[in-house]
Length: 94
Length: 393
Image (cartoon, rainbow over all chains, first blue to last red; front, side, top):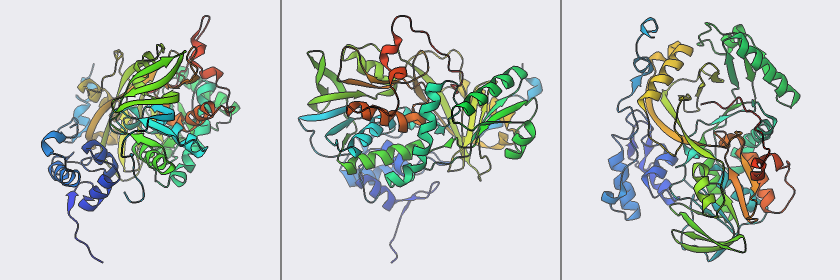
């Protein structure tokens, strides 16, 4: 049987069915939902998927998106290569 | 998730046999052991969402390579319990035994590591000394410059902490334990030197026993019963990179600077490093000082990682005791108040064993190990700490 599924988090390949199942299992806040499904943990870190996930959670639980808050956004804002963060080349370092 | 809930719904009961403060790996772990022994009249209080504390913020390292017997035994006994955990919970906890390499870059550290290997071997941990050639075979990407050798224990590994806690929560609920998120223990009602009830953010519940498994908040929880713990919360930072094809089997620990790095089951590199001068306190903020320090140390140790991108960084808190050993069991002066905290950064990896021991204590049974070395009462007059040299991160 083929059922339609909407991709919510393209980075981590999480669809609406998986999010709904996680909500049914008791993940009724965004932080819990993120930790169970892995949504918002890929390269976009939630920038592309959070709004849709919030709408899904609001619809499933009757919560208001305005009072739902967001996940904690972590540094860096964009993925950055380690060598940039490591700073100057070896010979220039103190 | 089909076939199980992670939390319980509906109002709290008026009383529970056991109330556990803290819904992390320790609180849920002890609840599971109690339920398996038939005691299901148990309430687990989590003040936030599951995984908000150190259980959701640690690097998932699991190792038996410790420097004191009291830590070694707890860790050694926990490894086979982690191996069995996915099957027991009906939930994949992503345990992978790729070993740990403790890397020594000078003769002094090498001598210390060799001594620790002998200590491990005398106590049932089959670690061994590996030379740089063998380390190179294990991790071809490793920078061998200055490397004298390393200790290696193939039974060590990594686990996915989120999955462990979720699996434990699901199993606890299935067994009939009451698991409540966003429900805080706000005070204890004392009578005759015992805790008779817990004031929660959802009302009062009477209880026979209280377990303090509150991690970096355990000092505050103990204070509500008038008990002083010698624990200090200290921030530790960590970061994760983008996912890569699996290439790094062992966890790497650089003894020059306290760097650790492993590749998790999603392919990401998980890495952290100790920050000198970190002030005590519960502080989950991230710092750029950490980012730079860990990036430098990691790119020095594994230069090919230089082009790998950092995905996110975060912080958690170690709940540190003066001897870096956990506090388990009875509380002097408050007989029905049980401690399960102070694990000093290795609470997750020893939790299978510590939660089993504490459950046995709560049940009034003889624990598998003597709890005396872990008792709160050890910090009495004349106490001298035995130094644990292998706290990392």
